[in-house]
Length: 231
Image (cartoon, rainbow, N blue to C red; front, side, top):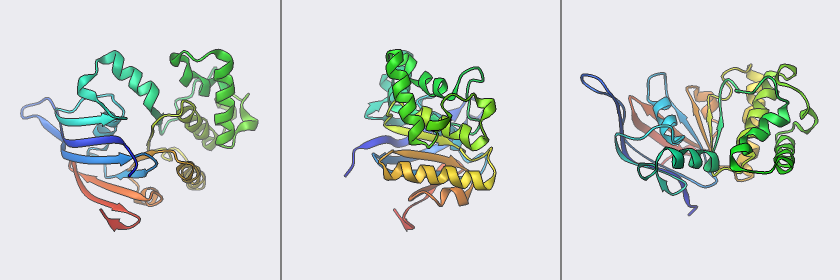
């Protein structure tokens, strides 16, 4: 068995209120190294809360969340920030590229806070750009890139630090269907190369590309399948 990269054990997450709003309700989930998992559910199902916990951006109300073997409850803010920088890569719907930087510089920013020397940052960023098929666009700025190219730059930025887990939040949401299919094809390639991926989406068609699919509704895991078989 591959080692667990992400573990949720009987996780409850509530937002303050009278009564409190329960966004996650006794969620237990394990993602192992090398897996590609799609978390799929409608708006209000708990996907965003789940993503915040997976990204070490929030703590559970009760239960245990472990990322790369580290229990979030035992970490202070500085340690959580270090864990995010070391173990996690993020891909967002809106790309979040810095307009004043080249594609190469955008990718290299992911290594700045790791203390990686500038020359090595550029070398590793160029390699990550080539990995996503954009080695010829390293000098272009975001305004000179298509939506699909911008998302590939964002994926390269997520990969450049060799994270244990890449979290992709609606990564095709701002793309047309053809470009979205190309990005999903890239995720398939990365999965075959051994990248561990969790994709958050509301779209059943997008989720179908992942070998493992986990359905969430009203804060609960309602179905989990791997290659079409319930697990």
